[in-house]
Length: 357
Image 1: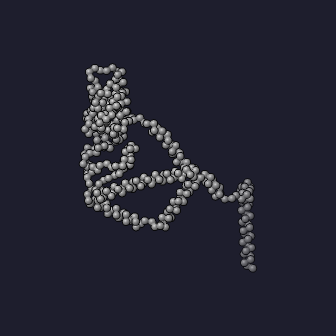
Image 2: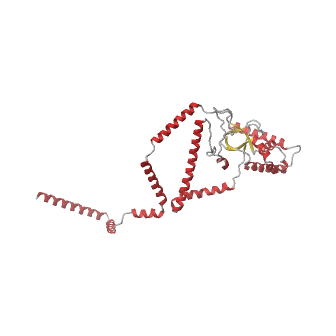
Image 3: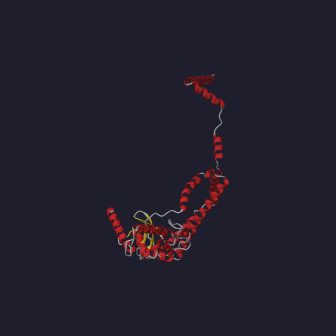
């Protein structure tokens, strides 16, 4: 299987080279130096287009690797709306989108892909617009607008903020580890900030889920507000997009809606029945307050003072006797044990004689 895949990739590269040569050359072969300049120009063009947010793209898994890809029709519309991007191509700026894409394919800056799943899933009316799994297109590697996907094959340059962020993470980790030694005011700021952000996120997710459940049960519509809030790969603008996407799936059956309505009512009744009373809530609140107070009020000085207070007082006389016994050796210890045994026997004999009289 691996040999077949390697042979297929070589065949694709050979076909790419011939197709790109036919698309570029108008009659005469350019000099070698000019070809090198063209290669650098198209490399710069590819990097510029990839960094531009106007070309819509997604991430997917292709042959056990994550790749960034776009659709052929989006590439054509992007070059129509952004003709300034073609200025970097110099004398080749008059080429149309198809010829430019064929050159990028020939230079191995792009590779044509195809969706892995080509059949409709149950309940779907059409195939996914952006598939999550791709494979290399095994036929012609030429450009096409109709249901064609193209993945970038070169490493994307990381912006400056990502480089700075990579140095910031160790500093943040160290700051988190040193939280117990912060001043009390800083601890309060960090605690209430983190608690407020966490409460906001949980409240947003809860309201979002309640709105989805209510519209799904009452109207039979799948409406997710903030649809990309849990997405793994999304820009900041897409992450906080409020309006949901259009529902492309079939409406749910009334039996399913009725079943989940009964389940929701039962869950709400159980939560109300087994909810903690006022005394339990006060006890939980007091316990959590004590834990938070212990964390906020802890400091190295208190830890050292508490350690010193917990140590028992040292008796100087007893310590001196113990040191002298240790210095006397095992013989002195045996004599002391023998004297103690004789004293116990004399006391016992005295007690017995008193009892007889």
